[in-house]
Length: 358
Ligand code: CS2
Ligand code: MN
Image (cartoon, rainbow, N blue to C red; front, side, top):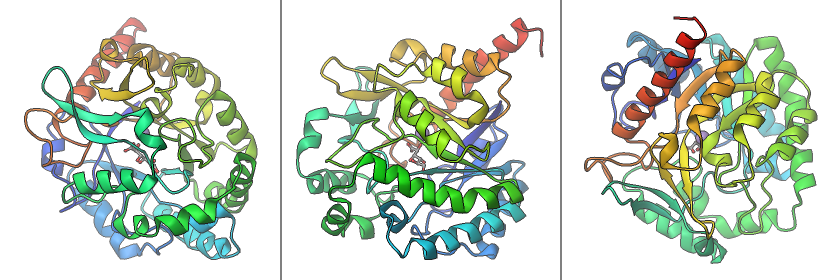
């Protein structure tokens, strides 16, 4: 397993690569050109400049998260072919600088969805929170709340320009079924996966977060059965998964270690995050320690370890600690993710030793 860290780029992240270098065991930076809207062309010079900088600090730049997918592709509009061409062009450019994995998602309208970015935990820290009942309201309320609270940071999937067109977007998705969304995903994959195979770049879809439909929008990567259907759309190792424990975790019926054991050979990227699920279905993000939430992080790492997983792994969201809230990107502070890295490496090191490794 190769430990990595998501970084939003120079001037766009509260954390520097020099800080990340001091976290033990982090080998690679998970990057993206975050200024790019979905469907925009990625220029070679911008790609090169970013990866050069990352590599100059001693990290690899093998993973991009995300190259976002234009809504016209998800909607299956005639204009999708134009956006797929641009996507293919980006895949080829990324291959040139040695990118191995692209993490993406296929969630209509929203990326991850929360109702509170700074919910207090009993220890005085705070974290991203999801209140089930608050979600049945008008999506605009939630957007206003999230955008109003995210400070100077634009969060992926929540770009104000896109959110300004919320009504239009919702209208476009009206009546869309899961089966149609799967069809649109299949169409996209059938076009891009042959290119990925030729250029040796693996696609790794990120599960829907939370793992259930919201605001009447279909969400299709959310449990074992949906994942199985997804993997059958284009049966190639180049069409794989980003297995995010924090996204699948809020549905307590998801047995994540079992999912890892079943689909391990198609998992290219592991996101590790812990969530605490309350009886009424609300959930909050907590420390990576298994005992603090409902994700048994030890069992998750053991499932990867048992199968000799040699893909990439990163701490996903963390709590905001020691006063860093509002100075960092929500969920992407320094301290809790660094603690998460050490917790995970502790488990991995001991699993290695038990197996007689080093
Ligand atoms: C990430 C997602 O912050 C997160 O929860 O794991 O936003 C992820 O980057 C996207 O869904 C991938 O496209
Ligand atoms: Mn994730």
